[in-house]
Length: 162
Picture 1 (tube, rainbow, N blue to C red):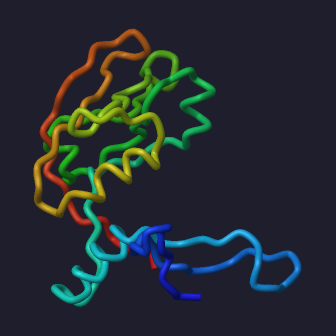
Picture 2: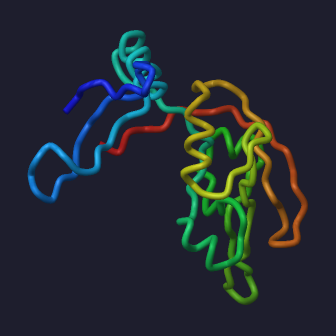
């Protein structure tokens, strides 16, 4: 609908976007964009003419895969060359040359000390930072019983898929 979403004190907390209504009436489950997200996006559009999203520079495994492997965190599948993560030394999944089996690389477990357990957590923590900022990413290195390592990663711009 595009209207404001207000709390019980009349403060803006979001912008309504759509309502799911099985009956077609204006009642059902409403979905809204949080006001902090709206503010950040609007400011970027005003300053740059477009939305710029910061990213670590990794390709991650789906959360279901991490759960199936009993991994607590975000599995790094691949680290593109030239990314902030590559410069910081983040390691993706590799293959054992002898057996061809996949060897777990780094697992992202925190951003700036805040715990990360799913890809959505990682995205939410990183989106509060700007492109070019350096953030502390904590990775678990060496498999399930590995050690935690703090890396400084310069955030790069995520390219739109559209």
